[in-house]
Image (tube, rainbow, N blue to C red; front, side, top):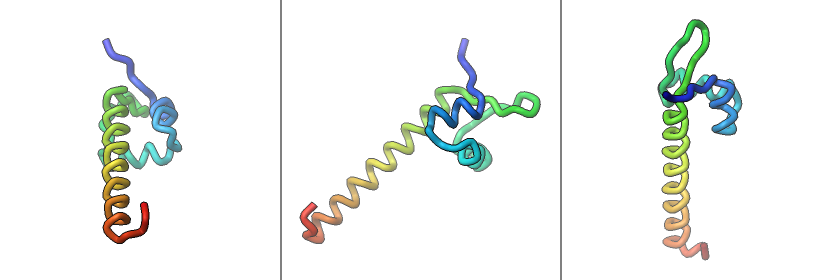
Length: 75
């Protein structure tokens, strides 16, 4: 059996506002199910989004650091 999350719980886990989470859901970045008027999320989907976002940020920072080194900025 798996635990389901409400949008408020998922927003808390991701440390984002509920309105930002709604945008993520509306754009399909995090899958969800509808139960009446509520959106229900699975923890693994929220965690996968968070991991993907962290990986994207890490790669971007590595690229910026490399560009700074290539330009001789001393980073």
